[in-house]
Amino acid sequence: MSINKIINKLTLCLLILFLSSCASTSNITQNIYDNKTINPENARLIFKRTNTFLYYAVDARIEINGQVITKLSKGSSFYYDIPPGRTNISVYGFMDPGKFSLELNLVKSKIYEFKVEPRTESFLPIVAFGLLGQIADTKINEQSGLFQISIDKYSNQ
Image 1 (cartoon, rainbow, N blue to C red):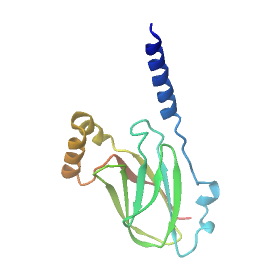
Image 2: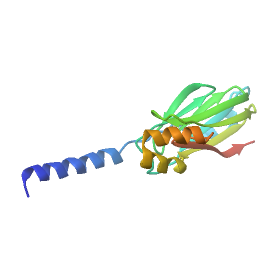
Image 3: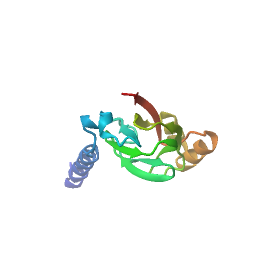
Image 4: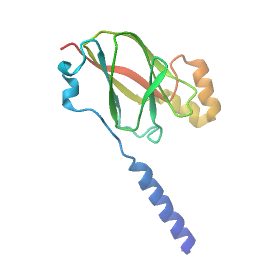
């Protein structure tokens, strides 16, 4: 075996190790779930991204009413306090032509927990047709993109 093949294999192993060791971050502590920590005029939104392999290298961007508030890496979480009322929450990936959105009417002093996870329906069009498959998925499906978001828990404490 030549030295070049050994170096190539070692480089590949190091690259795989580097990509799989991406750190996840969280600003969530147990007291975040306590209603007493919320301004009584706000609602609290908690976003948790699942720790799955699909799209693990792509950050999920969380957008509220048209403004990006955070990017979630694999296994990370984030909370955000917001005034109550009609709210649009969208999630999408970097260079992702599609978005997955929820329209909610938030109630003050309530805690909403959301699960952000890969949208498995988007995988086949991407693998089969690349960017064209992604664009077609966006045109065909109203809820498209690499990620999806759902309400996981609602606290009325």
